Length: 461
Ligand code: ATP
Ligand code: MG
Image (cartoon, rainbow, N blue to C red; front, top):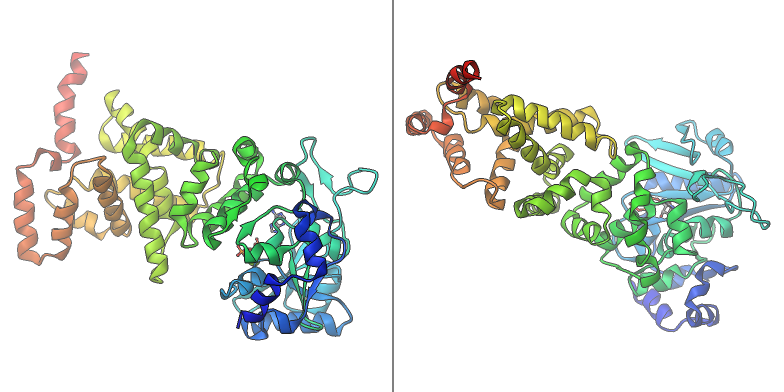
């Protein structure tokens, strides 16, 4: 199926040859290399019904309509595209008028969402250059080059050069099924290279999230980030601090919930990017070796679950990322005399407050994340009805999983995890036996006994 495409790339035509001779000229390519249908493997069978409908209707109304971005990149790599982005010369209003099931969204980037059941097709109008030929800003930029708004319409060539990576700037034309390649993306797909279009420093300054995207695609596609694209990241990583926390949350989900979390984490750490997202976790990792092991193990498990098609929740992953700073702060507060559970709650509050300055965490994930932490203080307390109550907690399973990770990473000695494992599996009889065994263990007594011990101390002070 891919033969034609591969053959074509191994025997490039004149146009491609000239670009290959001067790789730096990717961004200056003016006319596209047009790959006919017979020479590329992208077929309509790889494209969803919904995306085809959008493309045909736009085309039927006299507009240009292309599929672009990740779907074409993934299709060329032989992967099933997961969502479809359409680029057109119709304005957002014209698109909206063509589709009853559509909605205009976004301020920074105005786009149209066309909805078919659960599937959403994103339609964007070709964007022009952020600057005109006199260097005057047309799109809104901040003093340090950050693009604030980018709603200047342009033609397809300009649109291509506004995209991030060469492999994301391949356009599939529904009118004749050709692929238009403006930035040598086909060559970079063939050599599995991630290359920013244009001057990397300028492109990262315009939008620092491109650094995260570079890492995400390198991890997901197993691509190499070429040197000029890679080199500025180490220094420019702090630009991520300018990005609104809500946008970073979306990126964090994509980074860690796409099945390649472990390699993504290692790459982020390598380029100094992880600390810009989770500064407290980064500090905790410098303090204690187990903190990094715990994160790596959490990501390994998450990747495995995704590969097996089992559900994963960001709440658990966030709980694991931020556990070391929470535990660290909890220990400090306990040393100051606060009992374990309030110390944990206070520590959680402080760590979350600081984290939210970087990445927003919606309540639907923040609440379970705190529950998972709080249960870490309850899991050792098993006497009387406690073990049964804890077992019934809706977050028990996730909390137990975190407990296992803590033991595995060497934060705490092994043992409690085994006990809970046996307790979950055992029948009533076995559970009673396990509870009796716990009776003699002082760590299982709970805070009531601790309070009693503490009272006389308080009056002494
Ligand atoms: P995937 O959907 O697999 O995560 P994608 O490449 O399709 O990858 P999207 O976020 O869906 O990523 O974006 C669609 C396309 O829009 C990209 O392929 C790229 O051409 C363009 N794009 C997205 N984000 C940026 C950005 N920050 N800067 C420049 N172009 C971008
Ligand atoms: Mg996409």
